[in-house]
Image (cartoon, rainbow, N blue to C red; front, top):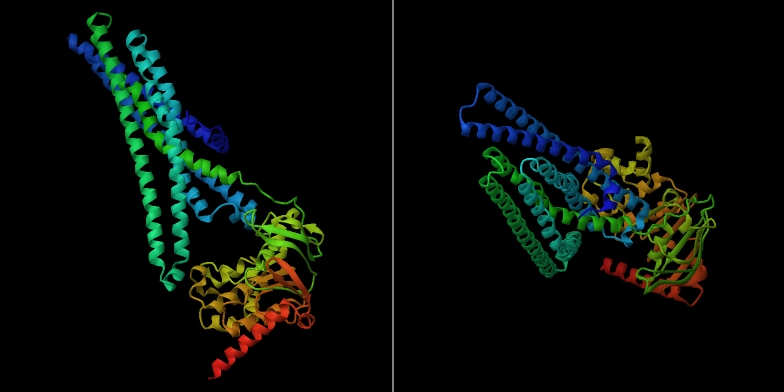
Length: 579
């Protein structure tokens, strides 16, 4: 009952702690039996008449020794519970972390970040109780009644048998609600993760919601999700309270039945007062372990529901590649490349392109044409394409992500800046970089002059660099990319949404990189790619044209239409600025 073999084998190091936990509890039970035996014998003798001084001393000595043993066992059991729970949390969190590493940057195609966080935090805490309390109690609850029956059967077999027979009624009552509870807790976790997803999304987009004054609508939607979660929580609590009431009724009823049987046996002269008291004192110990197991049942069920979510993540299909490394030739080629996010709506339609090594190639088009999707496939952030997409003749699906990330640096307009210092963010690209090298790349992107007026490399950064301007954040992201020093770079709208000066400086650095590196630029602004060796024009997931800037302008196609539209817009902006 409630024994998940896969879960236990996954955290096999916890077995020894569980075994020691059970051993400590059983030793405490043995000490209690010895204490009750001596105490009831003493009380029986006292009832009959005077008790010699030696009997007093012996009873007190055994009592003190038993209490010391029980105290030590309680400490030992608690220690084993802690070690078992710790091993579980460390192991499972490490497994999920390693799984995400193997899934790579494409993991968000299969699972949401908020769900991973919830499972790793609260889910692992629930499983700590499962391993630290429920499993030891499960085995002890099996062992304790058999031990007590073996002892009391020599005192009075009928009473011991009645107590033993009543014990299984508790797990029967637990099993009766287990199927219902499992379904209910599965729904509980679904609601819980859904609420977390909604909260995280609204929190990340709070600024946007405020700008468009739609935070009230999202607040209402979130309240609806919270209400659904409240209702399922109340159903879980109701189920727990009802099952606890049933278990209490069985436990107290069974103990009472055993006591009545013992009293009847004494009235018939089959046992004396001391033996009757021993059965009465130990009758509760028949049921307490199983009753404690019942109290852990619902927490354990919650942990089991969380483990289902964990294994769902751990069982996600991986595409680690065959361990092939990126060849020395970083030429990227696509042939009949197709891709869909959901398996239904096609984003890329039989796309063909070539990005030669040591060249500056551009991929342009209006928003939604598929250019960023193509960049995501090249960088390994998206998987599951059909057709062919190769680097140096090797299929990207066969290349290890480690090699792909080492050789291709991806920079977008949303490159993440970590909380810490400028130095911390730069060292992510090259942990061995010295101060002089970091200052050099910061100077290249024209950010060092600003940092000198702050705290230099130790200038603090808030979460995602919120204390820097958009242009400064993008300059820092570019400096970090330059420090990475990979053979190929993918710039996906890296100069968008920033001031003109920063955009010009960033494009200047991109042109400098293109002299020695393979550079792929994804852009909607055509002025940034006029010097490209080759330009691919995308429209609705298709490659419509390719060629140099001048070649494309000479053709009556998508490129010339976009170029003329953008030139008119820029001229209008300039005229408006001079008015």
